[in-house]
Image 1: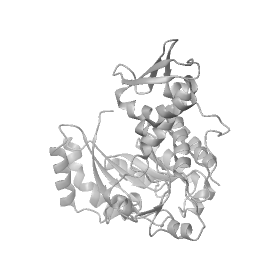
Image 2 (image 1 turned 180 degrees about the vertical axis):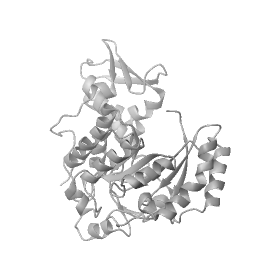
Image 3 (image 1 turned 90 degrees about the horizontal axis):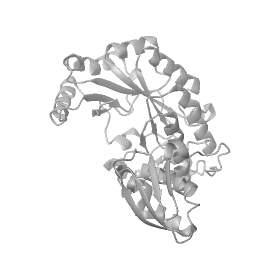
Length: 362
């Protein structure tokens, strides 16, 4: 699919029938969530189009529960965009909602108004975890929502949140494994963090909740990234977006927040592949490692930590890492004096079913 320019509108908490224990969308998005007027919609889209360099423009309504908004509010947001869709000035619309806020009538209306993608805040496919998070829906609602949207020809995205109260490493991966057969068109993974002012903050302070450590969150997400890649499901974000409001002092009380969280998880995948295939190189060998230029920093790890770790446990030296534009995104070539190895991150790395690759969160 051709790259699209996303024009975001944040309607934080609008339409939400529940306040989940983890949620403060205003802190995450930096927006009060007031729905834009028709004039604000058109002016903002026009500004983005002028800087889009001819790339397709897609309008996105993030946050809140779009399909639980009153009908007149939903249509007031979608109707002004219809002339832009007809002219091709906007190629599509995407909205975010809850799995239990959809029915045939709502889905039909979304399709008729040009909504091409719906992102579902699924968070978990474990009903006990969903109940403790105050979600108000169950896993069956998510499966039904997929069926309704697929039946209308609307693409479906999904959001998962490992580390919620009652969750575990194995449980988080089990949620992903139940979701993947539904074939989401895209996936976001947000390890749970404790935001000030939420119910989760109160539970954390009273000892009723222990967030994932950074190491455990990275271990879980590397497995989730790998399994999604093997299934061919693109993961478009891992970890909360490091916006100014979220990064402000005191906004994140506890939990695995890092502005480059995805790179931490991606680097762990590459380290695991290196550890799997490098053992045969003999003592004193000097290795030249080649990957796609876009993957050099992921392979090396932050401050070259992956290379230091490898050299600490193996008798060889990694002489240099090269970016090779002829290699695919997941390809890896290791050249030593004694041998050359060609491997692929998605094809050749597997985490075993006993979950030994990650430590359980007690």
